[in-house]
Image (cartoon, each protein chain N blue to C red):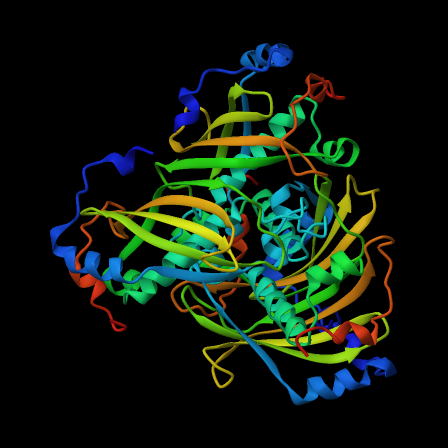
Length: 157
Length: 157
Length: 157
Length: 157
């Protein structure tokens, strides 16, 4: 995973965000329903990526970023550039999971986020570990755009 | 299901289509992958609706209607107004299914389609039977618009 | 929908349940994520069936029924026999939905459940209305089995 | 991605397979339906993992391995141990994709597979590039088991 060894190019305008995030570790609960499992009796592997994206969406919301308003008003969307996951232990139907979000690098136009999925609680069994790089794109040009500091000055902060 | 007992309001401009469709029964193969199943070891019930929609998409394509061009060039989309299904026998991981499409009513702004899902072939076991009403909407107004005869005068006919 | 006109065959052993359910209307919140939407910008129609199933699962849990224990310990599973939905207004990315569960008929081996999906609250816009019949099957025989009164005497009641 | 730098531990019993696979590059077509897209108008990122798994399933089938028989008769299942993907260009509704499968390492109990997703043909635009490690597990113990040479001596070879 070479991204982690890159020089840590934090966007200086967003330094306040970095401070804020470091103080508030984020975790989001996800219940496993039949729709998430497969005929092996376990959660279908690609669905862990959905669980991680739900947690990222809620993490952005907790920072005041509503992605529907971002798309409609600012014509900006986050897209996944690359992602990776290790599946350590299987989650099962009816499990209650906890999905963490940890911003490890925030560059001009992209985020690098590390996530973990635990059973029941942060003290529970670690089931999955993943990394996702997301970029902010203009919906008009589909090109990356700078992540503005104002992005995180939404209503809930 | 009251739609079936409605007077049969065939759009007269589309009569040629009716003739054409009656002559060409349509069926589309679908393979069951892990993604389609759940922890009961069977196909997850909501996924039969996906299978039926794939077959409807391919049936439209066989009539010369490409929905991406329809959305981009004509600013028209088909949307499902209501749908219903009976699950008679379960499909399983790795099954090869055959999904039929039968237009039973074509009104000014909507279709009523009946579908069946068989295992292996049209002589195989009947697993699912469903009905779907779809309307043609303007993407600008989100209101129903008339289904034009020209819709079916696409490249493949 | 002929099921609703059937004689109301309530299983007499389950009469206490009927009373209990009538007193406690059930609703479950669902947030719309990117995974639930499609290129029309709205929730993909088949995903409303997933939302309704999540609410049914949580309704059963509220009555003390954990389906993983039911499958493991009692070798019983609920399966959907038939389902139907009317899509009245579209739900969109980031919407917060509320999904109701209303048991309208409980026979020896099956349930008939009516559900509604509202935007934001029970006073909000009604987006979808559906009906689902589910049966209790033995995992050994895949045949319907009687819904026992003891099913609802779980840990949470 | 350290797996690629591991010593190349090819299972000697499976050497014939290696030869066979090298001679037959594998690609599987996938059509993009509404179910695969999201409100950004593009294929939802996690669904590329489903497309790659469909191609792996068909690649195994082309080698004579039917995973339902493997699970039922041999009590063996393939599970994904880790996976990774780079999303280079977006796929859209109605696109016809071609998904390749390339076995790069076959150890005693696991596979390492590289895949690419192209638009239209192998000469088309490269949209996605991924790597997946899968292990063969016993369904009784959920522990890895040796990949037997006989696995690939199925009916279609």
